Amino acid sequence: MYNNDIFKDFGTRLESILIYKPLLELDRKERVANIPLSSIGLSILLFMIDNMLHYKKNNTYKDIAKFLQRLIKEKVDYEMSFSEAQEKTILIVREYLRNNGQQFVYDYYDFEKNRFNQKSFHLIDFEENYDVSTASKQSESFVLTPEAIEGLFKTKEMFQEMQVTIMQMYFRQQIDRGVFDGAIRTVEELIFVLRNRHNEMKNLIKTISKDVLQVAREKEFEKTLQRYDETLRSEKEAFAKLKQLVEYTLDKYYKGDGEWTEREAKAIQAIRRVQRRWSEAMQAHEVLFSLKQDLQKTFTDNIENLMFNSFHTNINFEKEVLSLAIDNLIDLEGMRKILKPLNPIKPSRLFHPGIFFEPQKMKKEYEKTKEAIPELTPEQKRLKEAEDRKRTQLKIAKAKIVFEWLFNPLLNNESYEMKGYIQSIPEEVKSQDEFYIALIQMHQRRYISFKTIKPELQPHLDEFTQALLEFINESEINKVCSSASINLKTDEFIVLKPLGKEISNFIVRRNYDD
Image (cartoon, rainbow, N blue to C red):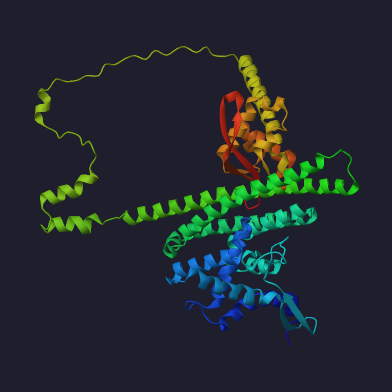
């Protein structure tokens, strides 16, 4: 007996595997410079998708031949003439990867639906708007089909390193074509992918903390860090360009005569939704920069601790030093060298009888005059305590209002950017000293806990902590999340005009793992 659920989506799974069959079949063909054609075929597909990702039109036979010639020279040190490279390129691309313009067709049996099915697809196609009838063979420009892109997307390297970039490319195509509902779905998937990458980097930080020596032995950390640097930088540039594209698309609708059709009104509404979700995706991507810094710092700190502990050696003085001295194996000079680090840097002078004949230094005694502080009467003490309590309560009330404005967005949102959010806070709140004190405290902390404490302990805390606890109890924000994390954006700043200073912009985000 077996569980029939194992065949769920059997056809879809098998069709995903059949995408790679044309590549694997290349190994039956004649090798180039003793390299299997499957490796060369995959390299050509990767070269083409890289050009597509950077919006380059360099996928002609000539461009691919230059790539192949350089690849063979650099990887196996084999000199191949350009004419030979061009001949091999036409053979591999046109006959093998394009199947002479015909679809690849494969039959398979679907155990879920109990029937034979057929999978047909192209890997490479002509570029859009390419006129086959008027163009020469050397100027033919190609693109990968969606099936080929998806197949590469599912391989390990592409999935881990280029998933975000490919989704950005999909997003651009959907905006250009006006498929705004599809663009929203792409952004949702992109945010999910970015959050998965957050978890991936956090897990790596945990691994380093547990066993940094093993991570260092594998010699992959520097490559991983360099890959993060390059990938994040290029992705950030693409995010900014695509943000401009969304804004430009929205402006095109607004620059009309002002009278929108029902279809245009729906399009504008969809673009606005895309714009909001795209901003959230950009914020999620910014968090990766902070995590990368944490990753690097964790590795450096753990390596330094490991080195310090390695050289921090303890010795048994009695067995390893004293016993040797007793057996006359260590002379006086050797003992002096051993004991010197144990003595104070400035040792006290040795006692000498001549000290009695030296001038004696005597300390002068000064009488400290104490200022008389008038004692308060019981009534005056009562009034002063009441006044202090009133001042404290007023300060707590002001600080609580400030915390309400600063943390209320977390009641309905996963995160928010402080620089943009400050613009919506009323001036009467921002004009208070408590506002800037709270803002600076948030900036200096990595986490702000929303845990509560016993009421009888609150009066012993400072005013700001009491205000935060009152806000937590009244808003019940701790039912939404356990704490808030602060993620700095070091390339942007918040200007604190009353103080004449500026601090880094930061993102406030919900935490659930306190």
